[in-house]
Length: 421
Ligand SMILES: [Zn+2]
Image 1 (cartoon, rainbow, N blue to C red):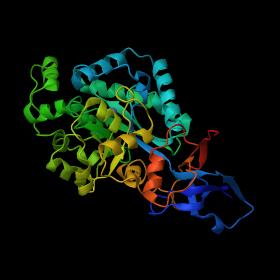
Image 2: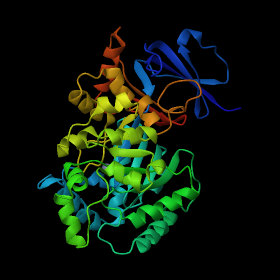
Image 3: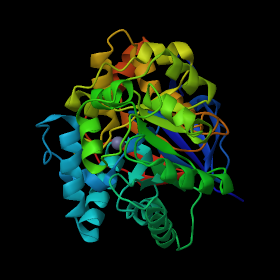
Image 4: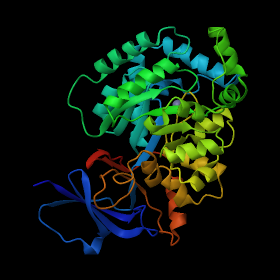
């Protein structure tokens, strides 16, 4: 018989009911939620273990849809001096000077911070390829996107062979838990050659369920490159390749469309610069968009057009990006930053961007991001206020403003963390 566990909490934010459940329980069997309801309605069975979380608000574990664990140790070390491209070059320089051991330390620290702050699903872009093994050990639900780029390198096929070799080494050792997936992330539309895009795409044709993510439409410099063939990125490209020509597309999203990449793409990260046609394409191909409020503020990117994505029905998830351009891996902080920049959006909707709506953006809307029978048992707890507010928006606001570690966390029915106090 699969073990059952009943969690009691002062309130549960299920994310599919408008009102929170007070004095509530969630019954878990194995990896999944079996039942959710009011405490008085739970029928006791001798085989059910009980854990009373006391004055806790229980909610779905938070989703960080975009992160670079490799660069956790770069917090505060790469200030913005001379624009986005200059910053990118300095991060690349630091990456080349980092040893595998340093990367492992950085990743482990990032995992620890993520767990503390209530992240239960983490989508990581892997530059060093070291995060796969460490995420596997962590128990976090995660997807590792092995990064592919060949900017300034002459032989795409040789680059691709090296990538495949490194992926094989990184993923060679079983077991392969169901909580961990891996896929590819061609870095950006301007740092990956057409040939390399084609080679990654061909690989995906053999593995249809492999997830993909691309940084796209992030900066003004990228926009200028596609719109006019000018600016800092265009200059760097012509330095590396005198035969360089302006891309044959008006926008980065339309460039990916011409390459035939949109049907293969799951997550478009950033999308700060998009036009109406781009929105149409993203919606048509059911691509989720990831917005990173902390990193967005660090660079001062053009305003993220949240209302338009919403109008088009394109699901948006939040992410932290790396600590080279952000201060914290807390998704609570990302929600607060989003709320500050978008004061018209209600707290419960802000919370959806790290829970149910985020799960939709990841294509996991039917299994993650809600406390609901049949859903995976990924849950966190934060301390409840002494008096529960009657207005659910006030309670959502309380949750968003939680600071410090969470008081409970669980992934796939397994408890990961219980911090005292
Ligand atoms: Zn990123």
